[in-house]
Image 1 (cartoon, rainbow, N blue to C red):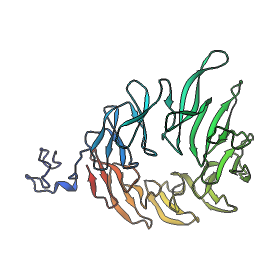
Image 2: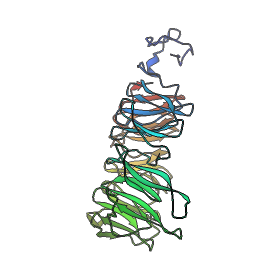
Image 3: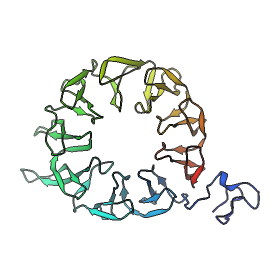
Image 4: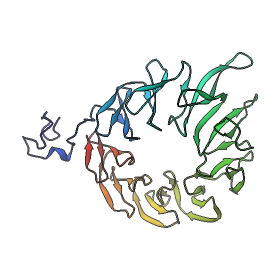
Length: 368
């Protein structure tokens, strides 16, 4: 390995620089793998991470050992024991956790999902001929055996969530609507919408033909209608529906829509409530902080940037460098990284001094 102090190559077993005496492992880990060769590294899913080198993709394990060489044009992260991968020919296939191809898609059928398999099905696309013999791109779903269980019928399709998938249908005049279908390809909610969000638990949000956002349940019952069609940040999470009116953020539990919480002076939010907290950028000072799901300030608005909490830690940016804080705001992992991804499976991928590393929740380098 190359020493960061004297810039010379030393055997891997050296933990101290023989020239300066500095401890090498404080900068780079002593591990089975070396990550300096990769252009990018994804988060860990099911114990594996997708890596990219020279424009090609491969897979490494939790020790940094390569299990799939970087020879694919694309690889999605692992989901339900499989990862979608695109060969140089352009054809798509699926590999298992050992990196072995176990399912190949027919020529002309592409993976349309950003995830791969979800709830046992994967969105795919392909060209078919319409009634006028025109070749048109349509979407459907395959199962884990590769069978097209929901045909290429739709103008777009999202992944399944909560037993339903959102698909787009377009009429002869080019007017598009979205509907929910079940795993038999049947229309699950007896209405068409301008836009739909995935079901989270028993609830989803959808926009009607008048531009109003609705909260519905799986029985197509209207739970709540947002008053202002210009609401921003409209989203649904595990526990809450949230929306913005001007610089005011509001949220409520779908099972109790009459009780709203709110927070003022919001410029933007990172994503949605996670682990009881939300990362918010204040319109007052342009800094990021955290509020609780009951509308209280938990962590002051002092950060340059911030991510939502994942696995008990949230990434924050201080003086141009990233670190991680806990629920109380205490800095758990010192800000020293140029780039970080959120923790996944107790590991986070980070970049320091143009080197990729993998750290644990104390900041200790596991692979580097």
